[in-house]
Image (cartoon, rainbow, N blue to C red; front, side, top):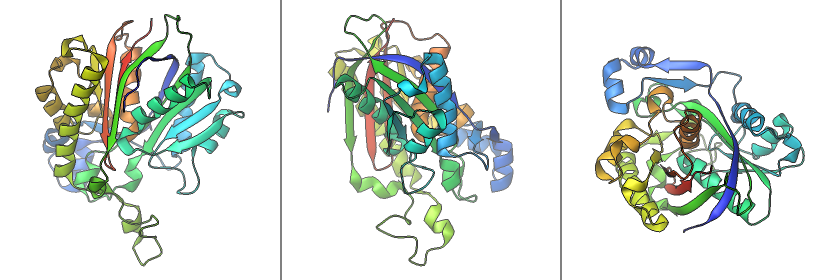
Length: 336
């Protein structure tokens, strides 16, 4: 799959992080592990953890309000609310309508998208395509995942890594001659269902309903094959970077920034070693937040923009890979 030349306005971005923080000292004490070994394995110093009152919709709504304030747009002008999450408020029905209600987007269509950790880039690709097609003028893309609700307290494979967070971006249609417009220079997307059981909640869906005698912990908690996920993330991440450069007609030194999914610092380090893009151009923030699933790339993009590190004409590669298995990469050229 490839998309070229789609132009859009990035009018506002917002993020929301829970107040709760889980550092390696506390986590190590709970799991009987040395805090330094936790950092060595993950590259994480602390994770943000949702509180009892936080939900995918409430955290996403916080991020959305920041994006709308930055964009100076009335919520009633939003045509579409697209929420990327694999941790919805309820398994039935979609969470996006509730999020739209919370922010006052009373005229917007709303739906959820689940591509796991690839969801942020997949949602951006979906929204920009719909805006370009003329289906919507103002699309609000929100990512919100609270993975900490679905990990076992005694499982180091998952509890070491995951944190919670949300991000939002307001995308609008752009004139072809608008110098402020961003350009989707290239995209790539794929999936491999043969790896579905590498990261999943094995019970609770229509294949294994929760009423079949499973314990509550089995129904709601994640299982992960860490080594296989690591191999997949490295191999697919390298392939996505190379494919985006080829499709966008870029040499590696023409890439201003690579924003990879913040799954594990060891995966990002392997991408730095194996990709031809200069290693200092890889964006990393997993140390402060943990793996925030579909929010990880939008959170990093928002920080990069807020720090003034993106110049007009810069090309950014957004490189996502996640459960399912799924992957989605975007080459974005920044507007002026």
